[in-house]
Length: 419
Image (tube, rainbow, N blue to C red; front, side, top):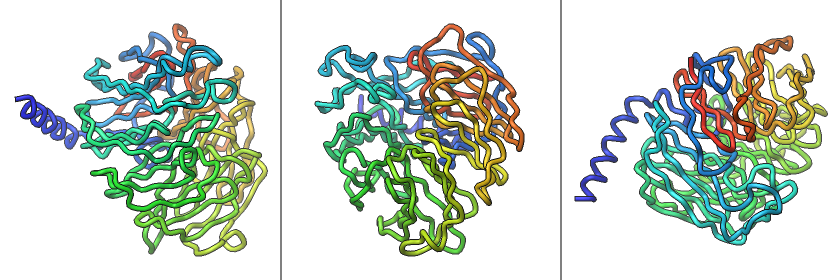
């Protein structure tokens, strides 16, 4: 009887999801992987205004919530790493929660014991903790990455289907790369765990291909359409931007990239890839090449960048905010020349979440300074500055949007904001 009920539940879930797939936010940075979305979400909010619901979470985390059909999935951790140099690592737990999208009610929740030892929670490692990799879903299965504890596959009712390890390595900054899907492949940047990029069969977890030499890369790969050619899988690692065949992992080209560790994910438009990174570096490179294309396909390189947050592309311009000094940048995508560099006010403090663009509005989320809504235009125009007066915990995760709702995750709560 239990098996029949589970089978029926899975079927009901699938029917619901198939009817609402257009509203889904299934991965880090949404449908395109670049933070671009349409929707009639609010420009202003507070702890009371435009909050459709607020749900307490079992612990902090910096992974983006994902939405599929009528369900929201979010991960977190508890027991250790809430404050630097406090608690016992043996008490660390990770959590996966499924919520009702309309009301925020908890449908199911799972807890996991980690593979220990993990990195100690102190210094730089305190910036994001132990639940930083955004899950991904194909509408039927949910895939979750917990660093050295492995990659998990669940059905949408919470039944675990498989788990595989992608390496045992740790780093004092932790693990943070998010998963993506390409056809029947689940692609994992396991730079911390094994210095590899790995493609798993999404049905079984078996390794289909892997690429070694993925050094100091805390960002998420991007599938880039190339005119007249098959799509490329592009990843930014220390010193290089690499274009690969996503079906077999074969390297197609590489270009000189960011000469230190890389957290921001790349974005693309019309076959041109834009990358920023630490060391105040940004560049544009045309896809579709072969071999080392540093001298032939790099369009520009500038001494500005962001250590953590990923950029946005919109109507020939690049936008991002620096993680420490609160400066919002607007850059001509064709030339790399800067159109404006504007310090936001009030001072945002640290900005680690990657922004999203909704129509002509950019949403920059700071850890403790609130959310800054800025016009995507050639002149800096701050439309609104929003804070949750009743919640002073970190807002460290990138946002998600589904239909006309904005989902913001702090260390304490998940918020659904809509008019």
